[in-house]
Length: 157
Image 1 (cartoon, rainbow, N blue to C red):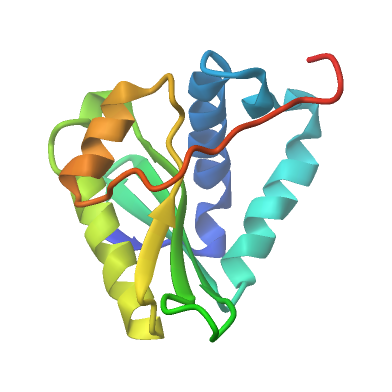
Image 2: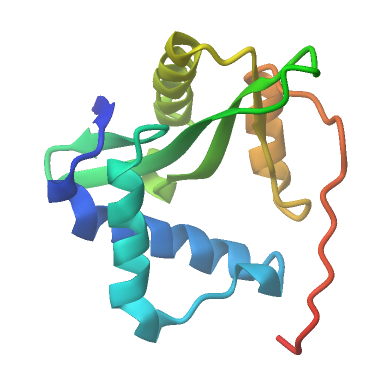
């Protein structure tokens, strides 16, 4: 499997993987819900992220398409903080048939390398509380829990 940065030519496959990720997460909490009828808007969002200079979408490519996705973003905060150059790991998804084969670790390594080259002095991410397998994976990569992200929907979901 090849790990590489995604291109505009991957947009349909990126959208497919992103939808699988969101569908899986809907079982964890309604905040992950999305509108399948908003395909054009959601694909535009992914396309725009492909062109952001501070964002990279990393993919694992198999012979017949993409098997995994990881979104990495570099952000600079206040220099008043010791750690102010944040690498953020966002949507991460590996197709079920390719899990536990090192694909997620390889994606993370590629993202970490890119974020470090940009100047990141720390990495952050969020994991759904109801997804212990993901929490275990990220802990194995060296992440530790520092805060608890909480959500309060203000509309009925």
